[in-house]
Image 1 (cartoon, rainbow, N blue to C red):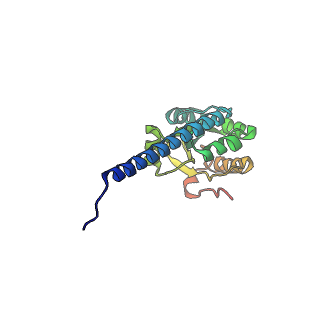
Image 2: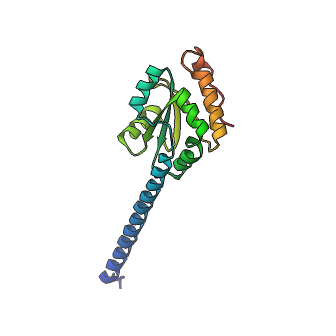
Image 3: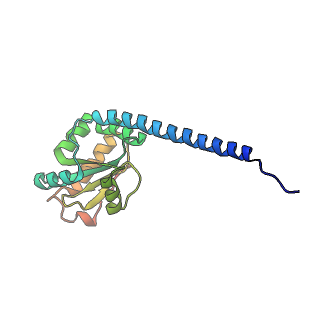
Length: 177
């Protein structure tokens, strides 16, 4: 005597798993949509100009500045926290406007994929300092302290600002804690 499979029971199990998959998928996309909306709100609180990478590189060249390239995702809670606690800070706004050009790269875009491949990074948020030619100079450590972020920007600017330090590539600054 072998085991007999009840086709009705098997069909119910398959239907149950399909239903679970549909519910899980719906929950994922609903959450992503809500998180993206929160991300849009956090991004709206940033008062300095946000550019795409090619425009930021052109402006950095003409203004003799460095680029802060931020790889981020609208649905990312960590990116949103960075926007709200660091980039919305008035002192950071002034420092970025004075010394840098800010580029935002969307993780989910073709540009984001190309950025990750070119600079060999993954995940988000990622903050890179680039020169006007698009060469990676350093990566900023992730911090949610506006004061610590400002200190890191000061170190980067002192070390890599165009024309200030010809030996910058040989002596990277110590960033972070």
